Length: 273
Length: 169
Image 1 (spheres, rainbow over the protein chains, first blue to last red):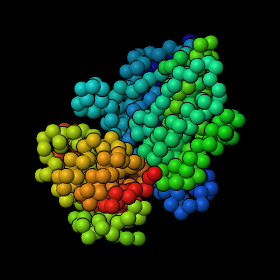
Image 2 (image 1 turned 45 degrees about the horizontal axis):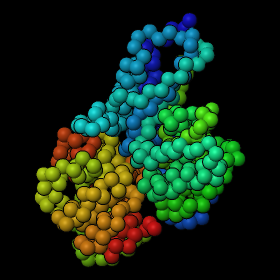
Image 3 (image 1 turned 120 degrees about the vertical axis):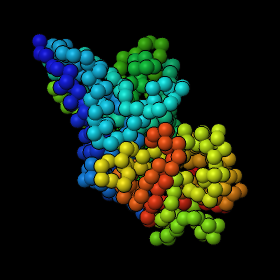
Image 4 (image 1 turned 180 degrees about the vertical axis):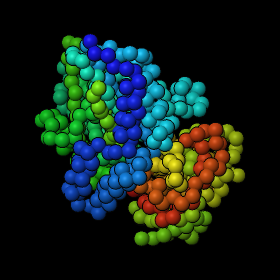
């Protein structure tokens, strides 16, 4: 049995929060560059150029890519042969707070969703999967709420046609329209229960924006990019950079489908202990 | 590119058409959800915003040695319910991202105001156009406080002009 100190987790989470918020993911940057090369309209090109320049300024000057430094979501793959010495969740939250403070990120977390009141840095939203082995993989996804607010879930009947599922996903992007910082990365979760479908949709955002994707993903991306929402919603060929689908077995009576959209500032960082 | 400056006069506003790219210099004020709610509860809108421009923005903390941190626009439509009352009180301009309600569009036309878009999700880049920043009101709201910003050539696109015409369908 391998022992990992809670303090090591805290330090790692701190670093990941800083890296995720200040350095745009290289796959997202590459996808934005490809979009810039593909666009022909001058306005779409101008906006994509500003988005690329923004990532460069953030990197060069250690500034947050976006002022909405998100609700910090932390995904943990915890090896079953690992023992954590010290409080696990406390270490994650201390790491988040330390990272956000060190990089002058925004304190966007409200303790009571109804009463509201003063905002702070924590708690993070933490998801833990127990896996085989003796390593701990931690991923920090600071999720901005402009796009999180556009999340949709529908419980289809099991005999629904694939065209209906596709329509729902495309319509979710249409409903987000110009509001949630397009071009988007569209996370889709299909199967499981209602709650799992939404989680799968969010986890889908962690997958690299590279390669062509499945046939269904390609078809959806093509349809979404025909919506002409475009960068900042001002028209263009790039409404989404990618569509990522994650599936899970489900019940004979159901077909849950969830859509969790990310803005173009899709930020995450991972590391293994 | 066309340059405009605060205070935004009716002469300047009249020349702006939906889709125009312009550069703004002068003074603007941040305000987002909680500031809007409080403004109207306390009836502070006349005192604070007559003739002014609101920027829907909640900046990060200010890093050492910087004027301001990342400070891009937040989603404008969350402020839609409050906007007609502010326009009535004399607000002349708003800066944000995304679409507005039919009521806001009508109020913009009625009061001859203007709604601007700026580069969404570009908070680091936009911080370069801000020359001075200070807390102006409601400091206890933290990132949702009202900040006074001095901007130079801040890049904007006219989203809804004073005739009520907009860039979105």
